[in-house]
Length: 211
Image 1 (tube, rainbow, N blue to C red):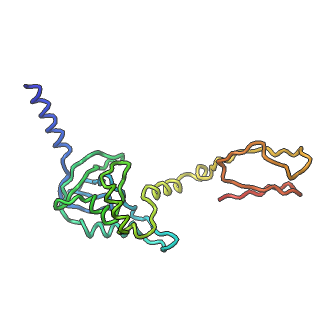
Image 2: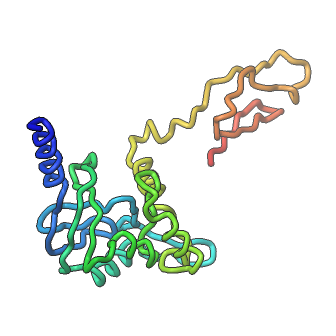
Image 3: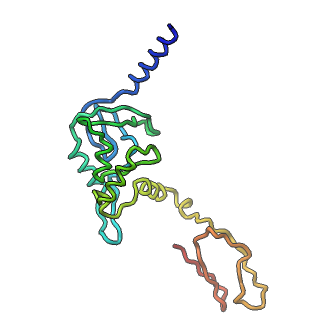
């Protein structure tokens, strides 16, 4: 009996650790709030970065990240959130599901087309996003790169030049011993290499093209 009571106490304490934070919201961006001073990353949603631009062939580029931040602030800035922590991310932020006046904040944002379901971390808003997409709400009404793809592109741009320029090209040997110059071919080819080239039949000059 004492052992059962001991484990019950542990469960209760564990539940207390996971509860909260609760309090007024300050919107950082479309999926990150400060709640009573604690930085909260909303569970299973992903919104455009604040500096992200959107658009496609049918619509000009526009500042969708800043727009999402403004719309999210209009919805939730200063309101009181009740959150249940689910995890801590690699940046030390509390990952949580939050409600305002009984409404799931993540569901509201995804349902209004201000954020996407982050299926890698949960399927909570999968159907909500599909409904928003079918109805062309918010971001779904125009071309938008997924926030994850945008962050990946930014990381690629931030890599040192020697890493960015490494396309997998390999040094190849050109066989000049063949009778007809038009049959010159590299002895080794790397199919992953994006560099293309031509060899002049008259001078042997090599001209390379990159994407």
